[in-house]
Structures are given as C-alpha cells and as structure tokens.
Image 1 (tube, rainbow, N blue to C red):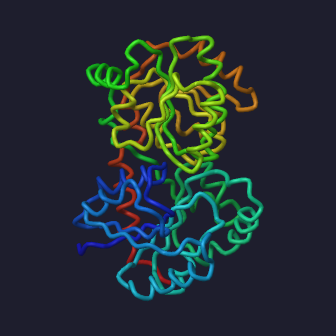
Image 2 (tube, helix red, strand yellow):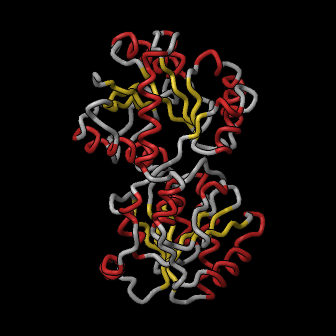
Image 3 (cartoon, rainbow, N blue to C red):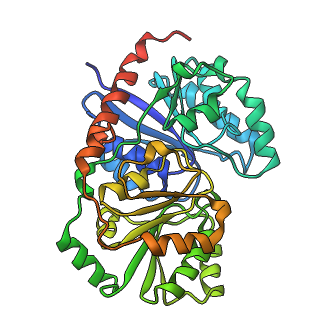
Length: 373
C-alpha cells in the first residue's frame, strides 16, 4: 500500500488535550502506510513541533482568523490549490465557530473531509455562539465523516445534523503501560519536586476557561486548611497562565502550589501524586483522566465529564454547583493515599489502549479513495 499523507488541522501544536491525543496516535500509527502533516494558525513554535518534524511530518501555517478573516480564507484556498497530494483532511474542533478549512477543502475537491468533535460546549461568547449555530446547518454538505471522542461530544456537535448511529466514536486511547504505578519513580519524583512528606494533589490540563482553575484553587485553599501538609501540582500552560498565577498570590498559596508548565514527563509526574482534582466546566473526553486512572490515582471530577471516562472505581463525580467547600469536604474524606488502584488491563480491555484507537483510525484513513465529492 502506498503511503498516504493525512492532513490534520487544528489551531496550534502546544500541549493540550487534542494535541496529546493526536500525538499518541501519531507515535503509534504505521508510518509506512500513513504520514501525518499539520495545518495550523501562524503562531509561535509549539511544544510538539520538533517531535513532529523528527517523525517525518510537515507543518504549514495560515493567517489566524482573529488577525484577518479575508487573509485566513485566502491562505486556506491557496494552500489546497497548491497541495493536491492530500486526499484526506482530519479537522479537530471544539466548536463550529470556525470551519473554514473544511469549506476550503471541499471547494478544492479533497475527497475525505473528517470532522472530529472533542468537546461538549463553547466559550461564553456571542459571536462564537452565532457562528456555531449558523455553521451547523452547513455540515452535511461539507463533511464526509463525523467523528467524536464521546457520546456527549457527538450529540453536542451533530445533534440534528446526522443520525446518532452515523457518528463514529473514536476512543481517546493512551499508551497504558507508560502509566502503571512504579514505587521507585514515585520516590524519585517526590524527592525531585521536594514533596516527599506531603499529601500531593494534582491537575493536568491547559490553562483555559474549560478547565476551571479558579474553582480548583478555591477548593485547594480549603483542602490545605483541613490537611496542612497538602500541596498542589499544576501541569500545563495556556492563555490563563497569568490569571492562575495571580489567583495563587491572592490566596497566598505560593508555598503550596507549584506551576510546572507544559511537560513531556507527565507519566512520571503522575507517579508522585496522591490524587487528582478535575473540576472542568466542560470536556469532550479528557485524555488526562484516562492517564490518571492508568496510574491508579483517585480522581475527583466534575459531573460535566462523561461517565464513559470512568474506568476505575476510585473516580468520584461531584456537581460544580455544590461549591468549593463541599468539594473540599468530600475530597478530604475520600482521598485516602492508599486508595491507588492499578488495573491497566481493564483500560485495555475497554478499548482505551492506543493500539485500539490507531487501528480504528487506520480503517477510516484507508477508505480515503472510496469517497466521492
């Protein structure tokens, strides 16, 4: 079989849930058959770019829509006119406010146009909401394959567009064996981070509205009053980085919270934690939650997260409306440092190992010559 180049379209290549999922697939897919290239906004160099180039991928940039709607459309049309080698575009989105890459691909006769839903909501912005509603009416004319990371993500993006059975569910697989609990790594990383005698809470996620870091910090502020030896590790980066830092200072948590930034050693950091707190406002299907369960960690998550993501028995769903006090009370009563469940085999058996995800996507990409325009 001749190698096919698949064009993935997303806004950037920094650390984030979509990017983490995509890189998991890219590292494990058969590169003799499929090579990934990336079309992104013209932004500063992202976290994963060097790795992509080392794997043989190409990275192209277009003017961001925020900078110029006209130039963005022009760049996209010129790109697809020039690059006729792409038979398949895989568009990753959190909402429908921006679907111009798919429109340009359709206009330029790219036969396979995949949309992949990774979320269940959109920011509270009137322009985004209007565009989302308007573009939803066009989907069936533009998209050939409708993918989603969960039942909720599929329903949210495609409800009223296609039948539920037409949605292709792609599980956010992980390399399960990388996360299995290792006492030696646990000790090494706790020493490295100077948290050997602490109760260590953690959160892995982009610093953005959806991840709800302000609520997380309010909750942790109450936890440390109940558990004086508690500390919080924040792994990630993003547009709210400055606001998170400011909130830490306001609550006088500088000695209790470590902002570790975007990291390539997340599996090892998870070894050092005692539990996870994930009060997201919305999620499609959090890859991080799978990784944390593979590491056996007790996880306290908001009830906005799909229950499809619950694999272990030590995952607890809490309503955001209960507020930080109730969250802190519940977590302090249930975090139990001994409650670490290591059952990577269960995650594999439920189809969340990366090998299952790759196999499913390879099937979809292999159909690329069977589509009509």
